[in-house]
Amino acid sequence: MKRLLTRLEKRGPGDGRHSDAYRLLREQHAALVARFQTHWPGWDAVAIEMSEAGVAAKGGRRLSASSVRRVWKRVCADIAKAQAVEATRKPIGGKFPSRISPDWRPQEVLPHTPPSAGVTASRALVAVSPDGVMPDFPTVDPSGAPLPEGQVFYRGRSMPRSAAENLVEIDLQGIEMDRYK
Image 1 (tube, rainbow, N blue to C red):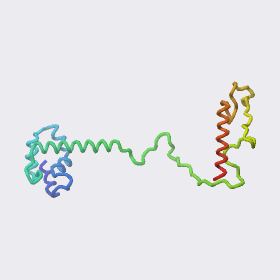
Image 2: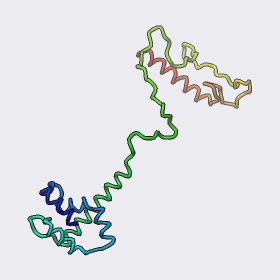
Image 3: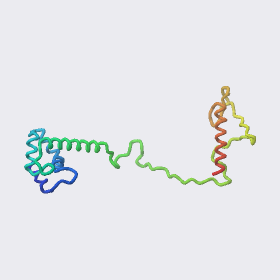
């Protein structure tokens, strides 16, 4: 550890955000964890060794065991937080999801062009008499089978007559709105 402390002396004072004790413990975290697992000298010994190497507390005072212990806990928490953030990051590039082809490209979207005056509206036209009377809906399906009472065949399926009438009104409103585009 003394050899590592000499590197700190060469670097000079703290970086302004963290103390020298924090930076030293953070830089040497892996080595210190391995050392502490085999031989635990106690916080007093660690504080004395760091103080003898020139690492001082705020105001130039000697490091205490409790301050070194608090800094060590903060270092361990910061490293755990950084590892958790790194674990949740998704790699940029790499493999595509399995359901998307690597050759997939988005479709080209063409700009909207308004219809010219001679073109009919884009909505399905419904044959409605000029006096606003609803069309006569078929009461049999395409195979010729009769539909239940109150059901009509419209837009390719069986539905209640009131729903078909509502759809016709919506179509007419759409045609009216298309006129003013």
